[in-house]
Length: 255
Image (cartoon, rainbow, N blue to C red; front, side, top):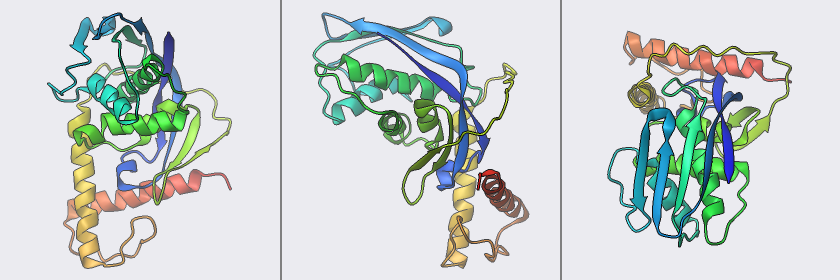
């Protein structure tokens, strides 16, 4: 079996999804690919030739043994959805998506993995792309209490150019403007994704909490006239930048 999934770029709304604000993201032509098949035993073997690495574990040993133990978490999420795995599997994962570059490489692999698992189960299931995106978010973010939002998982799973709304409930709209061609440059400087996400998320969430304490009816979706006098200069800059980011996205939406 062979499955591939694209990376993604965020066009509008970077660092907004974990605040519940909308984003516009687009799949790119660079993809991650998984090729694999069932085994006769219960071993799971994952070859990652791009990184000169491999992973091996048993379906009887799905306790997490490292940070971001994503391949095990994907299986556990599938088991939670009612899938049963009597046989292990062996696969190879390759990718043209730059790693640690902010273009959804890990989410593309997770989406691939869940799609692959759905077909390796004793009774294969057909999940739609939105469902796989939802499960990828659970396996990659919620399972490890990580700081990311939902943009990467849904945009890599569903592809195309998407307007993603996260509150009060998930709403996904495909956009079809003629955007021409994008050139994606890779600096080859690794991005410390988790620390950047945590720093950006935590700073914004703390600011929102402060403003809610001062302004009981504060809503980051609609409230532009909040009293921000309690914020220091750095927090004011972050808040004002967040609101500008939100408004720029709104201005780009087609009527």
